[in-house]
Length: 219
Image (cartoon, rainbow, N blue to C red; front, top):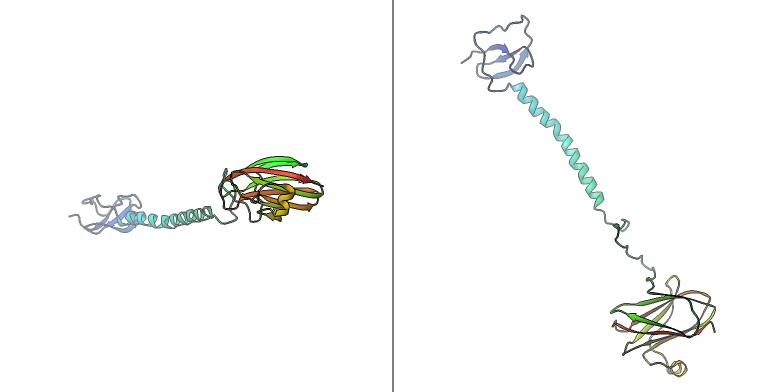
């Protein structure tokens, strides 16, 4: 066994490091004479001195706060990215949901219409057929007739989607005046010149088809 004493520092941190007889210690000093006082034997260098080991552990401790900050930053970014609240923008290519009160999009654009125009329509199951039209001031009659037992329900709206008139089955007087079937719907109102919307659906949500007639426009 090499006896305790000051020997050349194996890690080069100082000129001399204290060997306690079994291991290197953390005590170091400069060599004032230029030669170590104990030269009979040189201790083995298998075990690193405590100062070196302590430096490694200290470096690990210094990394912990940095790693913690990186993890916290990642969690904050993920938290904001997962926000799917009502004010979130929709993903590209995904249509946004209509706001409450927005009118349904039109299936058919009729433009300016005149009397005796005939427009066919098709309604999907649980669906609504929507047409937009422009009319002059005066009387407006919407004569909606279903085919093959289709029972139409008709709503007239203004351009902002507010309901103005509604009809399911026509009266005896309307049957005598305009014809059609008792299950067909008919709306007879006076309107100001402007843009309007016609909505047709089936009473029980069944699919079907029919025609929209305009016997009176602006009369």
